[in-house]
Image (cartoon, rainbow, N blue to C red; front, side, top):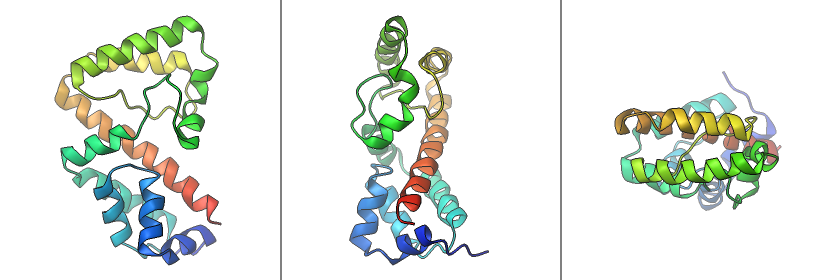
Length: 167
C-alpha cells in the first residue's frame, strides 16, 4: 500500500541531516533517529510508524535512556511544544495533584533510575497520578517494557504531527 500524502512525501524527500533533526525532535535517541532515517523512503504513514515501532523494539538500553532524557517530568514545565501539548491535562490539575505528581516522580526515579514516562496525551493530572501510583508497584523488568510501550505511543503521536506539519 502506498500513501503518498504530502507529509510522507516531504519527509522522504528531506536531506538526511534534515530528516535526522526532524526525527530527533520526536525522539531524542540518536540511534532511533539514524535508523528511521536510514529506512527511507517509507511511502506511507503506516510504513513509517511500523518502522518506528520496530526500531524502538530493537534499541539498546543506552539509547532508551537517551530517549527518556529528552522528556520532562510529568507535571514539570515542558521544554517543547510537543511536551506542552501532551501534558496539557496536568496544567489545570489541583495543587494537591501537582504536589503528589512531584512526590511520585521522585519515588519513581529513586525506584527505577529514570523518569516516569507515560503517554500523557488526553489524560488528566489525576489519571497520570493514578497510573504513576500503579506503576510504582511494577518490578524493574516489567516497568522497562511499559516504558518502551509508552515511548512507542509518544513516538507515533509525534511522528504523525511531524508529517502533518509537512503537508
